[in-house]
Each structure stands twice: as structure tokens, then as C-alpha cells.
Length: 207
Image (cartoon, rainbow, N blue to C red; front, side):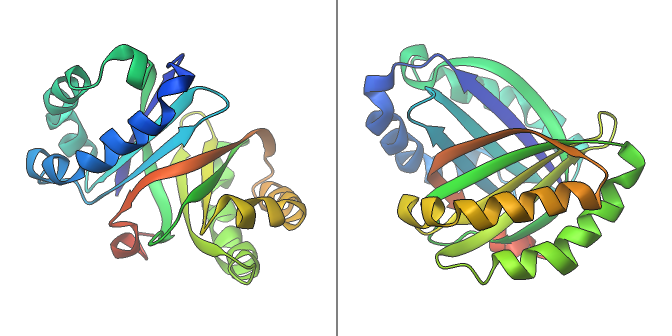
């Protein structure tokens, strides 16, 4: 399983509500235009004026074949609404669980030795995730890996922004333990509103 991760920056902050509404309104059309997509996670950072679009596919080939569709989709959102596309990356999906009802997300980016990614994923699945899942308001998790760069994007999903904030202290401790399990370091932590979460639960057990 693989994920196409597109990041957008420098959007008009006054249009955050419009962007969230547009993403949700277009979800049914997205499913029609991307029949090979297995799920999607759309995240909006109101304060940082950025957003992140993650779409899941069975293979890298399927992502490449869908590129023209994504280009056409971009034309449906004015630049002031979606922002400027900063990057498009492909990640291997290491873990995907839950997601239904999520309203907030925390993204942690870890970097370390590429040959420790599988070990780190196993540690996260068996040691870290069971502890995170016991926190109030936890709704799911997604872990994405770029083996060439030794980079992992770890996303935890929450029922509300209040639940996300309440989990900060425990999340800091568990994030550090997850990084240590992969001999990695935490390079960035960001918080988002979940504009759309579809199909993630059906991806459970991808590794």
C-alpha cells in the first residue's frame, strides 16, 4: 500500500472554512474520478495557512496513473483557497487504523536510518500504539515511510481539538519512545484539523 502526499502552503487564511467545506463537498466526486483510490485523509492547518492531502493506493503505478486526475482537480480550487502546491511525495503505508469520526490530527516527522524503519514500525505497532489508543479521544493512526530518506510521517487522529490538546504531554513522551525505537530523531510536529477521513479503517493491517 502506498500514499500520495501533497502539501500546500500560503493559502488565504480567511478562507479556511471555505476550503474545509469544498473538500467535503467534493469527496463523492473524488471517489468517482479516482476509482482505484483506497482511502483519503485531508488535513488543514488554520494557523499555518497550509494543508496536506493524503490519498491511498495499492501501488506506486496506480499513483502515477492518477496524476492527470489530480492535476485536473487542482483546477477546481482557486489558488487563494488551496494555496500553492509545495510538494508531492510518495510514501509506503506502514500502518493505518481507525480514522472514523476524527476531527483533529497530529503529524510527527521522524528521520533516522533507513534500515531501522521496519524495526521502528514494529515497535510502534506493538509498544506505542496500544498506549496511545488508551488516551481519551483517540481515533486512529497512520504511519508513512520514505525508505530512501529514512523519513517517517506518523499521524495520530483525535475526536476533537480539545482531545488532541489534552493528549500533548503523553504524546510527547510516546513520540520520543517511538523515535528511539527506530534510532530516529523528531524533526517536526504539526497539528491539523481533519477536513476528510475516508477508508482508513479498511486499510488496517497493511503491514
